Length: 111
Length: 114
Image (cartoon, rainbow over all chains, first blue to last red; front, side, top):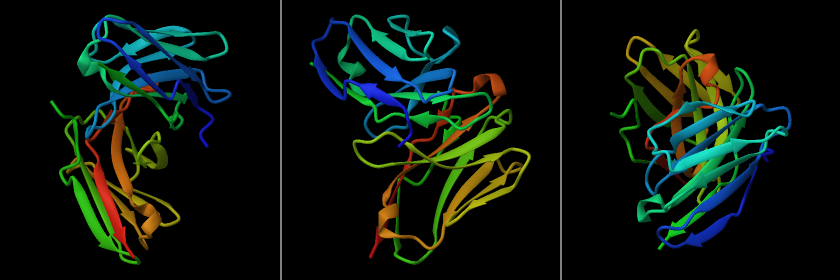
């Protein structure tokens, strides 16, 4: 039990649609990061939020965006969904210098 | 450009024996390394970590070794148990400001046979 919760656990969307995934961070953690994990691959860093501001981004297009709220919960938004966006999306929370803890993930299927 | 590599996709060991999972990296700026275990349909679970100022860290059955000159780290599990069967990911980070940014390897699937 990591204290990081994500919703929804599974969802199916149509190509071109938009999706919002949600994450509740572990208590006391002020940094949230999002990862995409395709089948057979390791998680790929999308971006990181620290105190409500994005402060690091991986190699993902602008249609991947996020928000972090004052209570440190977070959203990942993906616009104009493509078939290749089908993956497990992982949220992770951390605090300065400490270990990163992951949620169970949200499985997104784009058809 | 894979900065963290796990060259063995799978490993099979007998229960009670040692499991050794390997990881290589290319970026000398990495200063913190972590190992995660992942079961199907679950998120990665933190196992053990090591700072670049150390060469060994031990936690129960798990020991991580870091060889900075070779840019190589390994995870030893002794003794291996059937419940250890999972996918193991090596991850690296550089800079305390990048707390949430990890670079992962591709993973190694460990099977521990009873």
